[in-house]
Length: 212
Image 1 (cartoon, rainbow, N blue to C red):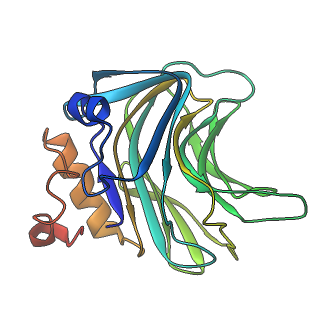
Image 2 (image 1 turned 180 degrees about the vertical axis):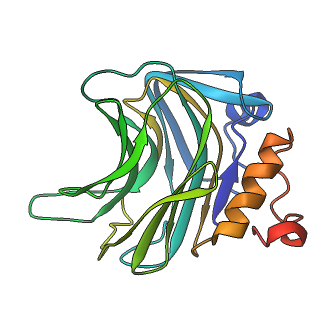
C-alpha cells in the first residue's frame, strides 16, 4: 500500500498520516473531525486536504478506496471527494478522481468522464477504483458496478486531494500501486463494517484477503 489514513482526530490534529509522516500535507478551507465509519472521519465543506507525494502514473496499476458520505446532493456540481492527478490544455485521462455531479457518481479522468451507474444518496458507502493497466473497475460497497477499458495517462505531479468542492464526510482512505481484486475489496468492506479500521491493520488483512 502506498498510503492509508483512517482520518482520525489524532491523525488530523497531528498533521501526519499512517506511513506518510513527513509528507507535505496542507488543509485549505473548512474541515473538521466528526464520527465516521470507524472512529473519526473528516467533514468537508468548501475545503480540502492536499497531500504531496508520488502517485501511480501513466497506465500503472493502482487501487483507490475510501468511505464517503454526502451531506448534500446539489443538482449540478458536487466536487471530488477523492483523487489525484493534473490536467492541462489538450490532455485526456490525466486525472484519477471520484466525482459527484448532478446526483450521480462519475470517474473523472480530465476531458473524460465515466458514468459509474450509482445514484448519490446521504448514506455511507465504500467506493473503490481499481485499475489493472487496462481495465478500470468501480466497486460500490465491494460489489463491482462498472468495468471499462481506459488508456489512462495519469499525471503524477498533482496532489492527492480529499474533499475538494465536496460537502460531506470521508473516512478510511487508502491507495495501492496494484489492482485489488473483488475478494480483497470484500475483505476491506467487511472489516470496516465490523467496526475495525483496515487502515490500521492492512498488514494483518493479508490473512483474510491479502489487502496489503
